[in-house]
Image (tube, rainbow, N blue to C red; front, side, top):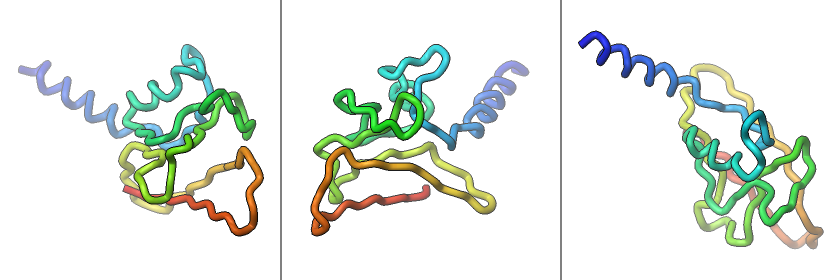
Length: 116
């Protein structure tokens, strides 16, 4: 019975330490093609986004970036969703972005940031 009580406590402690900082680059033992799967195994969710979509690396920093595919529109649920956060004080959100082509001033682009 003692072992059964310790095991859930260990899993609870692990789930509290979910990543909230990510650069989408490769790392020891995780190549670019495996970054998305590794993050999904850590409760990240990606809708119409992939690492270096179609081989395009925007070169923001490092060797990887999340890139939207053509189906990412403002009216669907496209996006990058982090694990649920427990925010108990101030939080800073920052990101870098780049477009892969020029567009006219009349064109619109949008970005939603939601905190769960």
